[in-house]
Amino acid sequence: MTWKEDAKKHFIECQPAEGCGFLVEKGGNEFFYPCKNIASHVEEEVTFAIDPLDYAACEDSGADILAIIHSHVEGNADPSEADIKNCKLYMTDWYIYSIQDDNWCFLETD
Image 1 (spheres, rainbow, N blue to C red):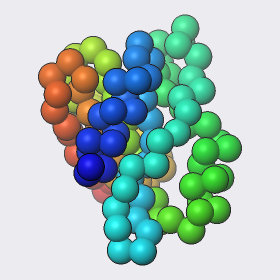
Image 2: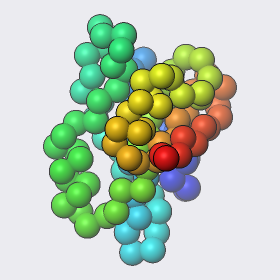
Image 3: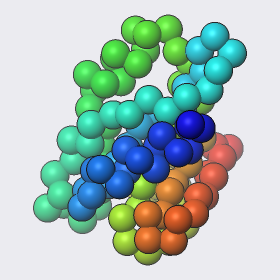
């Protein structure tokens, strides 16, 4: 499976919440590193938040984080204002997957 296929599988399992994780590189291979979404789904501004324990475990694994990946459960894969703001804040590229449309958006950090 490709990292995109692994990510899609994880995102579908996370519904109705958004799924999240990292695109990482280790040993010359890219793969999806799934993470727990700890966001309160009552808040409309925050639809995903990566568990800090998952972030730490990913860092400890020796993998290089290439991008943050998350899903949009409803609607298209276009980045929200919060996605754009956070991509710039964390200075990391983002991939967004639309479960509804089965497509991807790549958001490159400036």
